[in-house]
Length: 448
Ligand code: NAD
Image 1 (cartoon, rainbow, N blue to C red):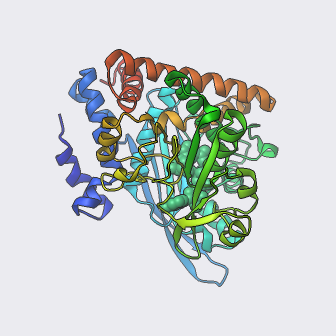
Image 2: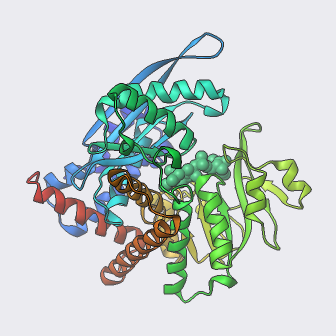
Image 3: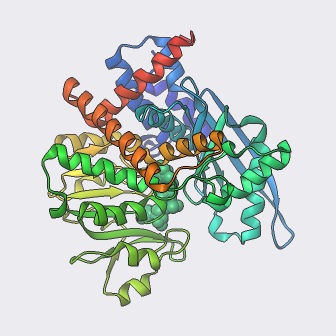
């Protein structure tokens, strides 16, 4: 069995850092450590373990883009297909200045466990471009999107690997990428990408699907814990696609009270937390938030919100914490600041908790809804979008949401039942459910 320290040197070489903190918070090493625990409990053989521990295929490249002022900028891009034993690779595309191959590898691994936990016939993949889209004009953003697609077009397709939106990419970026792919192929292939606008073959309900799925998981967690959701309070980190929908539906459907929300301010290059103890209004906050998820500080203050530092969301006295920004929101160093009142952690973001923080959460008896279960609503509706593209027939939003609720509820309970049966924390239980399904598919194919 390969040890974590062996793979440490392999991945550190590609991620460009080897300080202890960098290794401790390296998302791919975290993903491998989480997997190792599940493999041990499932008593899987060494070949199966190795296949599950590494991406099946990865593409790393540069591409040139002519900027508006005539300069050519060269961008680094990635696409990782982690495992496709259960079906075509599936996963989002990130445009982010700190994107690394190891982040993309980790996210593609988590996508593999995510599609398995909701039991949809897909594998896991992820992609990204190292860039700051906030600095682009719309025409530059379009050229970056098309440039990325030209590099990956030969490696993706509806039955190979299907990208979707993620951090700082949206349906507009998906439209340009779809058009570039279809131009190269010379025919319509709507199922090559999901998260498209409705007019180009998108699914009703895709925009809010991840956030709604998060709220379905929170609803089920409160049910099994015997907590009345209308008496709960929550604190949220990150107010983009996922955070906005999670906040709105937590208040609307569960009747909970949102106390504070944090977001990243690109101009000040720091995060702020916006508090309203009598209850924040997520619909109002959305109206003063830009396309990059930055809440307008002056307008929030005018409306009576108290503005504190970006970490304040973590120590708020609430029942529910929802990290919906990026990786490593809770580490061994920061987890101690969580209020004793917190009962549930709903990981809307991917990889918000390091293993060191996990140990503390488990000791404190906080009910964790692990990331790849909690935020699986997005990929579930992406799958529905592929199904509708294949039929060329489209469902009304109510049907999409009904099917989404069913999938999320059933995934939540398969993980909860496993946690009870094996007497393990929820994250390990989710790994047991997913890894067993992927390992089984590999075995049926005769790979291992
Ligand atoms: P987004 O770009 O729409 O929003 C990200 C938000 O995080 C923004 O509000 C930004 O201001 C905020 N943010 C960034 N750094 C922060 C910090 N240090 N403190 C406070 N706020 C910070 O991205 P998204 O699509 O909402 O994705 C959020 C998370 O959910 C990511 O981990 C992503 O991988 C995951 N996810 C997204 C989807 C999806 O369908 N979009 C699906 C599953 C998982």
